[in-house]
Length: 120
Image (cartoon, rainbow, N blue to C red):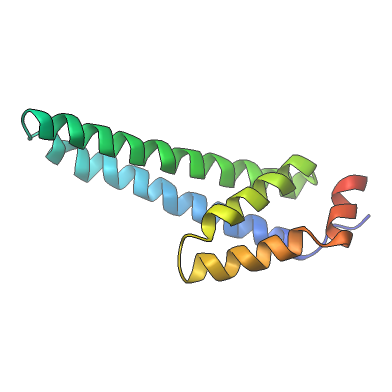
């Protein structure tokens, strides 16, 4: 079965959002951590905790996006599921992520797309 055309576009979108999250990870590491390390006492602990949680969430988001994009390009069912999860998380990025996330979810649950992943 021929790969649906929009799967490549969705994979590119996932890779671009992963790149954006990676830029965020880099910005936290370069700019925020040195400033937090200048703090003292409870502010230092709270700042490091908060930045660590932000880094962990961005790292998970990046991992889901990259794995989903690779899975989509290879025609794997787990790639479709991860892409749906990525689109669901992207709904929080108002307004563009919301619009694109809704369109991706609608597209990836279509019967012909599900059939492609079932036959791949």
